[in-house]
Length: 427
Image 1 (cartoon, rainbow, N blue to C red):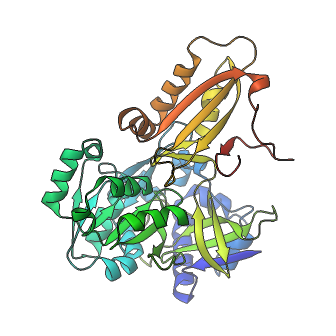
Image 2 (cartoon, rainbow, N blue to C red):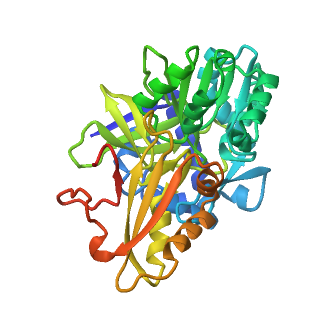
Image 3 (cartoon, rainbow, N blue to C red):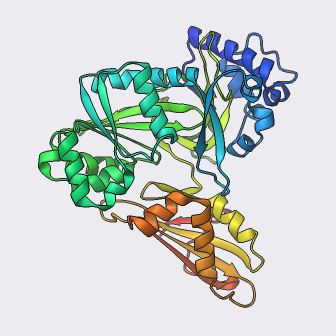
């Protein structure tokens, strides 16, 4: 069964056809994907039927010669290249045009106009520009000319409470932009005199559980949470509003979203496929049709209640540790044969998330292998190094064991191979 949400009305369908025409004119990848398909009258239902053969996945993003349009490769217009965290230790680079910035503004506009277009002062703890999150916030707000001030605060200030408080006292912010883990930690750090002025908390980048949302709102009693579902590839695809009394559904304003059963019997959890829709005359840096980002949507009554971010990822105080990244490091190592990850996620009872990576060797334990694996992870994923080594907001442990002891003490799921075991859920 498929559910289609987002910009699937008449105007959205017309813009979908325009976007596809431009993609077929300029992009080799999509010419191959849509070969043999009648695209002139394409509809969102057609996209849903085509997910088996017409789609794009994160690993395809490295094929820039095929997926970047000719007007980007030539180049025929100005664009910014944004760097995403690589799932295999290699960064993916996404072209971002002025039209993308305008589109981001349209994605932000519904909640900005309702909750922030009133002279708000935003304290942003996203990574330094030109990070994706920072570009979206800065560029999108500018594109819609929102009546707000945007203060980019160095993320290192989170390590120095005195400097952090001085910054907040100077800015007197009324809104926070940050990762979910940072919002919770700020709630534990800031005095009531500052927290009382915070009216809007914009978070994203990881799954926001009802329990953590409740804990954040208890710490910021005058605030609402805007929970964003976004990616560098598509922008701020969707959002929901969470208050102390109500958890809203996700809204998708500028994308067409296909939600499909995975065939595992869990009907309320559906795989997400994202199609980026541009307006007539616009040019996106990266056309996307049925982008299989790997995330799942929890659906109730046809509405998206929550989004579970890429299931093969653990979050260490906001930084992402990807299973693909660990897999490449382990399987490329001559002395290692397998691994599992034991994950203790962030919660009100556990303010420092922790990941223990068990790596297995076949014969003799390689000398210094734990430090070697950790160094390789840090080399490929600097945000993890920052959160674990410098800020100490999270913990990463590597333990080497003989292969026969790799899964010792772990639960076993019949007929299913798992590599990430979550404390409190699996144990």
